Image (cartoon, rainbow, N blue to C red; front, side, top):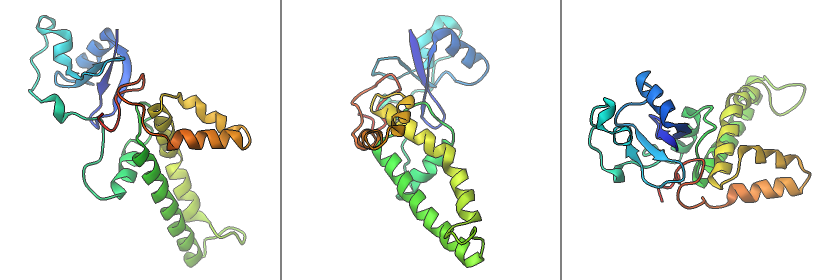
Length: 199
């Protein structure tokens, strides 16, 4: 059997074998109260429950399963979604719900406009183009998290991140990828982790 474990930011990591989880516990990557989920399962449980009391693992700190949900920002208005993606900078595993993906895209669009305005005010535009250094710096800064949230969004629909290359097929590929990115989450847990909406 293989299992996902919840990262400190509640992103599902894995899947891993039980021996790998034991090694993670020994090196401090996971703790007794870290939540784990069997691949294909729907019930999260503390790591200590998985290995049992005979494995020399202390009982976990009690926490009701209803309190555990996949990562979702809890405060900060709409900008919280952009911040959550940036905190999970190169996290290509797990799933991202539609709201996380599209709010990240919206704020990127707004920040790029601000960067263009700053480039024009500061005179840092490039060869008569309407953008320059600020725009390019911001673009490079969000390139990796943008790819990561797109891959997680594909995972949310049950697709591999490699499906992003379908985008290279002229017209049809871009339309297909857009439809997948705009589709609702696949219900329940899929091979990439639990539903980020918590349903």
